[in-house]
Length: 334
Ligand SMILES: CSC[C@@H](O)[C@@H](O)C(=O)COP(=O)(O)O
Picture 1 (tube, rainbow, N blue to C red):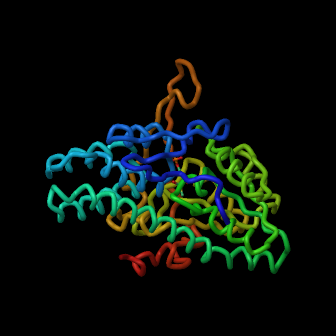
Picture 2 (picture 1 turned 180 degrees about the vertical axis):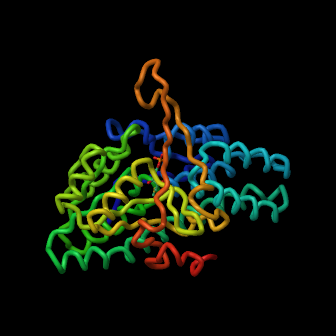
Picture 3 (picture 1 turned 120 degrees about the vertical axis):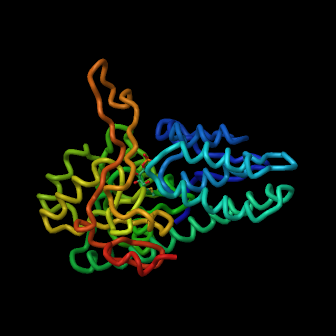
């Protein structure tokens, strides 16, 4: 599968991102030149999706160093804390920043610039490779359905495609692999109120020529009840050590409906999305976003951006190391 654009790429001393706040209406790029630009891009959701947030934060540290000959430990701490405060739920952000801290603390201030660019580049390349592996490991699930009944109907939520990562996507990676393998695959795309990330998924699938149907979030239960969905695959923003999954709000309701109708529910995520230090879903911070996103006037609004799907509702976690039972995440702890 080749993708028409890159979500993030280097351009000399700058980083160029695809502005996802303007998709699918318009394809526009933004040049990030410093720490403030990178932090703004994450906070404003010009870049979004857990793995891409992590990669952008890593490049943000490199941008913070810029052309400065000396970048002290205090400078490093300041850059890391600005980036860490951008969005609370996606653990890939903190995972990437910890890697940057580890590498830079070991290098002398004069060599930190090169070290930072190298590590950010490595994080981006590793994400691309991990997601390609997720596609390969998820493919047999879809092949088994195709062997049984021909067309494969997958439901997804939010956008966990290449737009949400450095490349390939997580939940969409097995779907792209299925298309490459010649399977007859169709995707039910839920709109994903209030930010409409489902439109990004529909845009991606359209570009790739994957048959899909956009539905309102609330249609998911009916489709599952009517037997129109063979499996659900979603991404994740953080997976706790016990296998509880934080993902875009609305994921939990799909998992409940999938269980009620005997439909397998898979989560696709790289190991960088697993927070082994987080005991369970109750300990995952849930981002509360602006009331304005719901378009209400003076009404009191709550706008949690993520929800928690208990491990008991998850059939398996598709990682770069294979499909793991949520109760067995310890077996892939790095
Ligand atoms: C591969 S992305 C997985 C998740 O990050 C994705 O499903 C999601 O919830 C994205 O949320 P967003 O608020 O758009 O950053």
